[in-house]
Image (cartoon, rainbow, N blue to C red; front, side, top):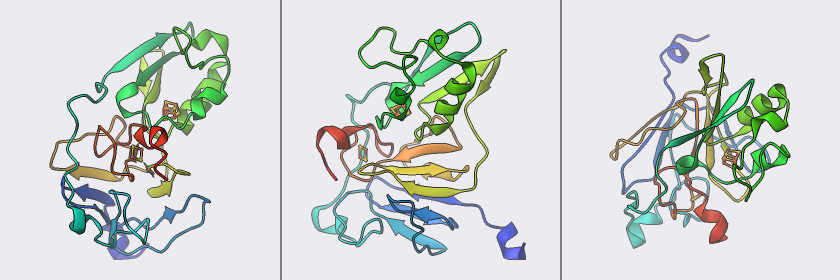
Length: 210
Ligand code: SF4
Ligand code: FES
């Protein structure tokens, strides 16, 4: 490894008026998994208006941008769903609603109460689906140990018609003291309409923004 690589600390920062400023992230993938060009420092669009998505083209300067958290956003709070071998934790406040978890039936079922029933599935399958949750909304505890952060290379992936999916411990800083549920992975809004800026809250789905 080159000396300069050892000093790299991938990070993303923003203010309520700025795009995402990304530094030292080499891996950026489009919606189809194709690798995109990166620079050591680059700006990514968060308002949804750029003609050069995912990169910022300064469109936000025309309309102005004030990406503050809305008072009526979902609370940033975990709820526990206990099974005999595993407890699943869910934080609706940061869920990007891409629905991957709902593919593990009947453990996850929309509209049912409780919507997560760990004893209806195998522990290994539940772990596998939680590791696929891009937002950090899902995590789990086994034998008193909480599993929330996984080990992956730093990368930014674009969800189909959805947010930036960040993984690999890319440090996040903004001027609203926003703290991802998992420091290892989280979803950043790129449509500009989330009530929980900078995190995606699934608002893009209702408004069909992409
Ligand atoms: S972000 Fe996670 S919890 Fe939310 S729908 Fe997707 S997989 Fe389920
Ligand atoms: S990209 Fe999901 S709310 Fe903006």
